[in-house]
Length: 74
Image (cartoon, rainbow, N blue to C red; front, side, top):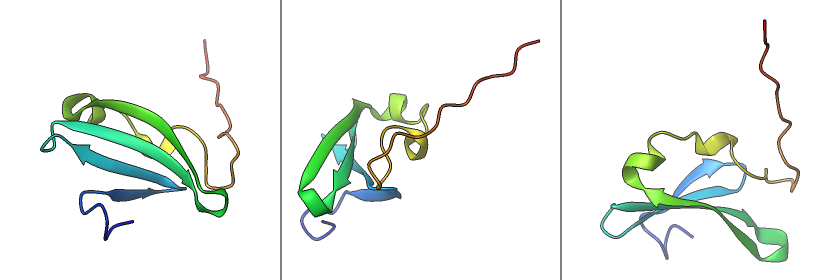
């Protein structure tokens, strides 16, 4: 993948981040190589990307959604 897309960054659990438009936009995808599946998880500006945690969004490499945690309320 890196040979074809030099701007691609692997961020773990099947997630890849692509720089688009001269690094103006970001595309986050989830890849399941065993079944040739690519899901678009997020698209936005570079500024919006800086405000999210891509390592915790979407599906994991096992194809299972991450467990949701509840915030403690007082």
